[in-house]
Length: 303
Image (cartoon, rainbow, N blue to C red):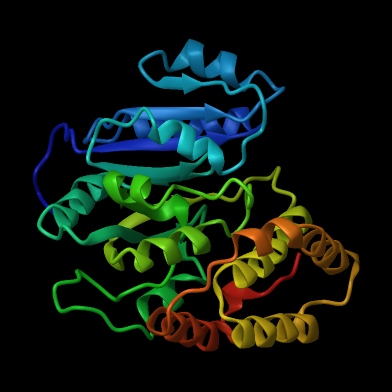
């Protein structure tokens, strides 16, 4: 980690939130104390628990956006419209960046103009243990150019990633159809299609203290639905059929999975209208990742 200290004007932090006032206030307090002193933009997705009022009162130096409805991940797109720095670091209301990591991320991105994003090591609080997804990132099976600062990735986790603002905008940001839940996969695919690279950088650290208000079942429904939609938006026909069949065979046979498949089926008309399969070289990378993830403890549709 770099030993330089003091403010760094290269990165803006974007946070989305919904009805998690106390957790958000804790996160904003930690962001305020970062040595980089990054600008922070908060999109309040129509909270009803006084979140917006508390942010305006306690963090007047931060930009607060109040779209008036729950935009999900698209709240990040709204915030990025206000970003004036070359890089944007995403946060959820239950995650925060370690001191020095934003500076180091910018140092990694500055000399690599085709690098779109660097994803950090995630520590789960309060114990400080590695998130189960970290080995999957660290041991990525994908290859990339020698100039990458770490293993090449095929996707990223928004709450642990610093992105090049130009690349985010060029790829269109997060797709409004997916709303929330695994929304990164489609954006990552479109970034790679445009020639951008993604990398894991274990020297960066994000802390995650999972919200007590998290509805794990609802998130599973959205995650599975969006996996199916991504599959049919970007995978060629035979891989899409195989992926769908694998999910049908392997997901839990319960009401949540049934809802996910029902929602995915209901959305097929718009998905098929926007369907744009990737070229063979990118499909090979997606297939490689799919095989590697099948035994990952971080990729199980449970909860």
